[in-house]
Length: 258
Ligand code: NAD
Image 1 (spheres, rainbow, N blue to C red):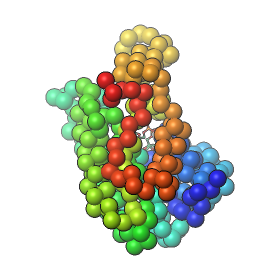
Image 2: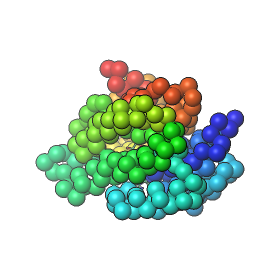
Image 3: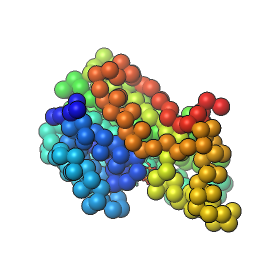
Image 4: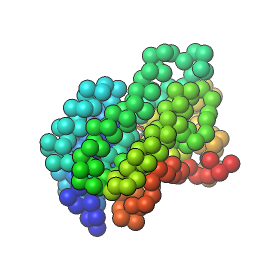
């Protein structure tokens, strides 16, 4: 299968977790990949390269609009186009609203919401010119419902679903689509930090903390796998999904059905 051969995908925050799984799945369909993100980038790049496509990396800090603009330009120059944009980079901070540090609020809004506005406004002209594009925003169940102590994250994720709908409407008469994916709990480094905090707070093992965390919200009692979310992204990139526009598609073990 190489349904995306000749296309280029930019996946923000693709050095770990969901973003890395997205990059691998799109590469397996033949898309060339521009990766981005911090941390252990060399192993992540090697993993995507092993899929046999062209891979490059840009270290833009997604909280900095000028760096985002430079990354979009560098990707278009390196690969000739950005056909698929996956806005995935994200961070979390957990605190009651009255204790929420102003600097953490600003960082969560910048990285989880404003970055998608910037990547979209810079990448969209090229997509419209070619009359083909796929913009996939990794939102969250927290774009649909709230949880305590996640004011900035919930605000950003509700915001990105709004942005998704506006972009979907503005591109509705073109070959560009824009949709959001809303995962429930996925066991990635972002969530492992919350598992660690819970294990320490409750004096329980890592496994017990994981089970308690997922069961509290997710009726299935199971984590969603990054590869399952990536398969949905591949579907959204295909012809069968050309009229899926402005969706906020949950994959959450039943979380938001309650
Ligand atoms: P993760 O921590 O494994 O990945 C986050 C990625 O974003 C990493 O590559 C990191 O380096 C990158 N990143 C962070 N700050 C950045 C910055 N300033 N500039 C560039 N890159 C930056 O986490 P994940 O769980 O894979 O999260 C990916 C996305 O999925 C996030 O938007 C998150 O909100 C969303 N999400 C995760 C879950 C979950 O349960 N894990 C659930 C719903 C939604």
